[in-house]
Each structure stands twice: as structure tokens, then as C-alpha cells.
Image (cartoon, rainbow, N blue to C red; front, side):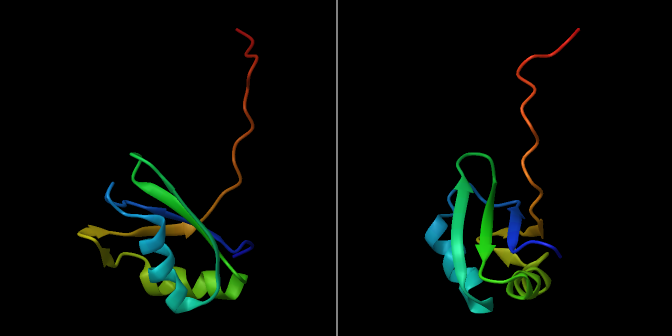
Length: 86
């Protein structure tokens, strides 16, 4: 892995940022948590790349609040193509 930020998918809509922080803090220092409301996913940034890798390996495909988690390294956002040529 090259980054300490993780994508966390297949979340139930009721999951809170506090719940995710508590879950991931078992694997190291959690720098930030962001749940995208009504989308079923979020992002967790760990203190180090090693902590992120540890959390990813331990938690991927485990059940959390009734759903099987999908965890991967977060990708940088795609640039916005405000002006498209047709």
C-alpha cells in the first residue's frame, strides 16, 4: 500500500463515524473518518501505512452491523471534467 487512507464499502446506512473510528482504532491511530451519507461507504485514514494495511487485512470481508465490509486502499479523487467537448 502507498497510502494510509482506506475505502470502506458495503456499510449499512445507519453506521456512524464514531462506530467506524471505534472499529478501526483497534489496529492503530485513526486520523480521520468520513461516512458518505446514504451511499453505503466511507473513508478511514490511519496514522501510518502499516496500520492501514493491518486494519485492511484484519477487517476485510468481516461482518459489521449486519453487512460484510469491503475494504481497499482509497484512490485519489478523479478530476472534475467541468467542460466536456462533444
